[in-house]
Image 1 (spheres, rainbow, N blue to C red):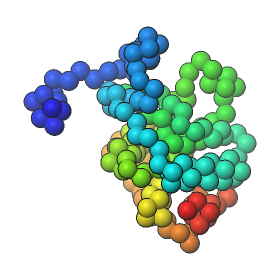
Image 2: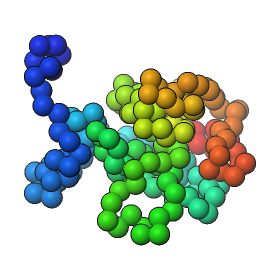
Image 3: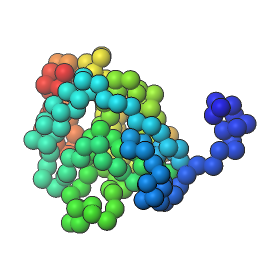
Image 4: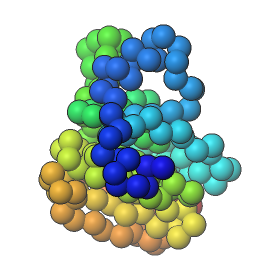
Length: 183
């Protein structure tokens, strides 16, 4: 139904505040996230997704600067979305995010096995929000697309890194992650 432009124009998107209220009332499923005002069902995780996620979490936590926190599948509250990226590196909060979710991140990672289109759309949301870096991990290709230079139209740069290469990020304090250790 939403594929029809006339109907799509009539759909009323949810605000982040309404989404939160629905959650407080227990009206949302457990595996959902808000993307561009629309509630989207999250896919279940395949074994390869889980294995790559655990390896990458371990490597990022070991390499990350102490002023940053590595979060797994936790919400980011953005303008019209509240995605739950596989990994988000956020500034450490003195409140420990007890009263609100982070509203930005320095690096966001999505692992795409069956969700490539959705994860690419999330990448656009992250760029529009000004998140400096976005990694799209493609286990089946044994490759990572490392995006940087965010703008309102998306990321200005995409570096494709394959096994044999290394990922770098400002949050890693000059450290590098070898792709061979992820796949």
